[in-house]
Length: 318
Picture 1 (spheres, rainbow, N blue to C red):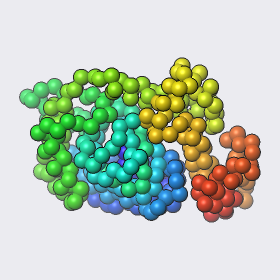
Picture 2 (picture 1 turned 45 degrees about the vertical axis):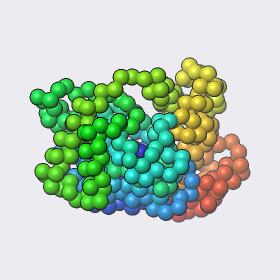
Picture 3 (picture 1 turned 60 degrees about the horizontal axis):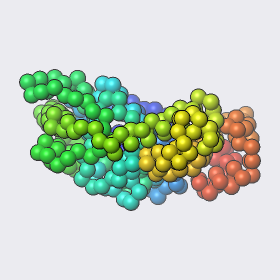
Picture 4 (picture 1 turned 180 degrees about the horizontal axis):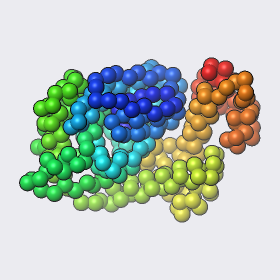
């Protein structure tokens, strides 16, 4: 899903103020605004900048964002936060843990929820981040909140439709979050959404949760072993799943097979290192060898296809 802010190859935190951030020449990047950290891996050259407008108060943080380039996003909601997300534009190929995104869908992501998304250029969403403790306080006298780790869109009940209306208004006027009464009201609406939606576990949701586990375990294996170009057999052993199940899990979650995903991931990691390296001290070969790249000519061709420039050109742009 769209982040609550964009920055290049680093993390940024902000105070409770209204502001707009724009990202264009960004490849592998991390965002950290309002306590929600999202990792991105770009999957194309980009067609324009990505913009995010943020505003909020102690009751909640709002972000209104649009993607100007395609990317795979992943995050885990912190244990003290709940995130509500309204999809305002959903081009073909937009996925959320295997769920096709559509305009008008509302999602609620409770503490500890892990999610992955395929975000094509043109995807836009409005996200509200609310402290879980505040929702629990507001729910006293109404019922007990159940923080379900679902990744399904919420059904069209009264509280859901009311929350959609409020987020649509906030999308057009994010600075409303600066008003204490408004931000408290929209947080109260979020609490009522959680009270109203207590759906039982379904087989489809179980499969998506299993797929997210396979993808998470595969990424953890790659990061722990620094096996940046894993084989399918290595991923099967690390996840205790069959080849067909591993392939399906990655298609379900990020919209592409595992080998292709890790290819993009490696290119993004190398590009970040090229941009951060000192060209008078390190060379392209030094950096690529540290990632296990054994065919520099083939790698350079793939890199140029992905980013429209050679590795050496990126390195000199520092």
